[in-house]
Length: 147
Image: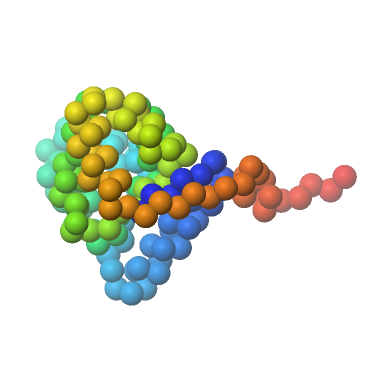
């Protein structure tokens, strides 16, 4: 599933609600911001625990990746994502929360061949949800200041 929308539109809230529901139905769920996932894998590579770290992401029945492609990826990041997406393809469910349209993902991934491989494993079998609205939910639901 791909959830697209502007900052504060409720992408993370929706993805986590789906994750909680899956967990209540006894499915393993793992939530991670993509920048944190990539940082974890870089540290695990240095500590010699890379395969153990990658295994965690491969085995979850539902993996929620928030802030998907918020930053342009580095070469190691691209290879790590391809490994995880390939292992999960048609074996586990993944929710991607992103501010960026799918058409712009190739540019964020960088390497054209790797971008094709990663997107091919995601886009063609995905349901896409667009969350509209111009105001951030944080702005609308935040603390009201008295005049």
